[in-house]
Image (tube, rainbow, N blue to C red; front, side):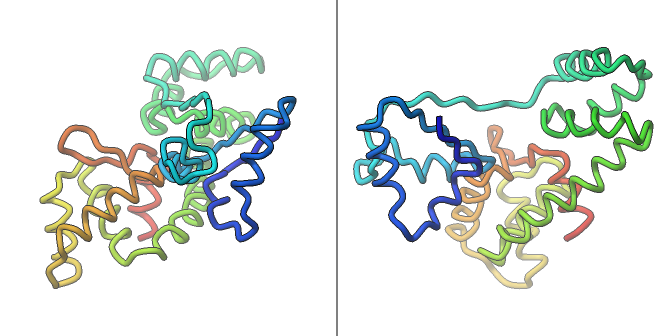
Length: 218
């Protein structure tokens, strides 16, 4: 088993890694390739299962996407973890963590670990430390387009934003007209990177720590 974490970054490789991995897939049957990544859309683009020009085109694969827990599942998850540690945690603290971390499994795990040492300060600590981690990812992403920051800021400020809200915000901040094609392209890229989700006619930032970071740092 060979695992590539954050495998979407392999697209920057200059050594022609996809033909090599396709060869492994085709001829080394005792090896299983696993690709994981936080930027799901870009990861799918890199692998290119449905792209006839890709070395992986037509190969069999299994896709597992870890969705956020709902409130009930999040509470059960935290309670089970604390029970294993022999810790009794006030229901209000659990409810607040669930509300602010919005079912993102990684942040729930982080909160649980920090609670052992930080107690009631654990939630603030998750936000603070999480923001430092997320900011590095955002800085790298935002360097690719001057409008990424403004689009994310518009969505983070409103909670959920429609197309018109985003366009108006970008125009207000830049003082100039921006083409629909530019906003459309950048929104699609932000969705591919996993920073933004679309629900019906609205866009939102699914990860509460990303939203918190955008509001606090940009």
